[in-house]
Length: 342
Image (cartoon, rainbow, N blue to C red; front, top):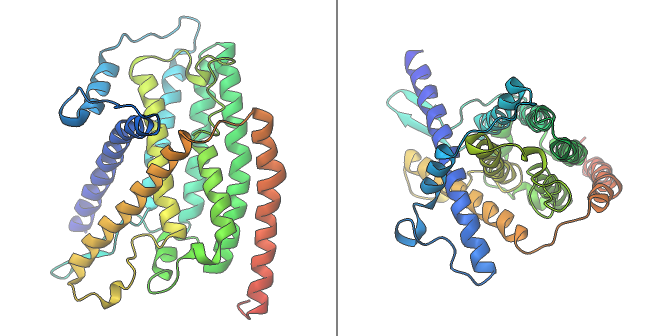
């Protein structure tokens, strides 16, 4: 039992540090991708190729003056960014990062918690993240912050419906809510994206909206809302909100890879002449490659497609994505019945 607790503690720390590290260097990658798209150089002063830029940015955030408006609710003003950061970090515990590592008589899974309601857990935690934004916007006592928070909350709630409906069809196909089980089912067979292409497309679009990324970055708008829900925030509290966005992108990429692209499974892995532990390490590296691809995709779309108007965003969510997700559920049900899977 002591070994099990020690192992889980180390794994939690590793996932925590990896999440922070990926989020930090995503800010660097974002600026490099933007520079590539716009034919610029990007950050290149802090260290070779500007590789130390995230550390310089972090130091700058910590050194900036801390300002809390006198008219704000100070407790909630601090609670808002803390909640956003906490919920972003909590979702990583159910992600299966690789196969098992065997040492002696012990087998250590590269997953913190393989709970049988993993998908519901992710949705519950993500829904809780809305409170971080709403509380921050309300506690600022600034009408622009409040309007930005309302925009962000209504957008996230609207797209969570379509995202949940898209997953219903996948759950019908897999018969499980466990992320670990869904990944295991894709071992040695075609990935779920082949069976659920429409569900994947809806889930991907909703992931962009849930992370407030362009073309769905309506919570912030300099011409209407100044900085949106975090207008009054400065120093590391603003850093928490910005950092939470990049952690959400990282976790969203991991969830998309797990649900639709085989997770840590490598094609033909059962025919590879390698040891089980080496295979687990390769699986982790392969899974990380998929995550980096989707993080790049998030950035590529941001610097390529112009943002929606707010009415267009709501129309897309309620009039197109939700009906399409319901159609996908019906089509999946009919197909499963026709194939005798029910």
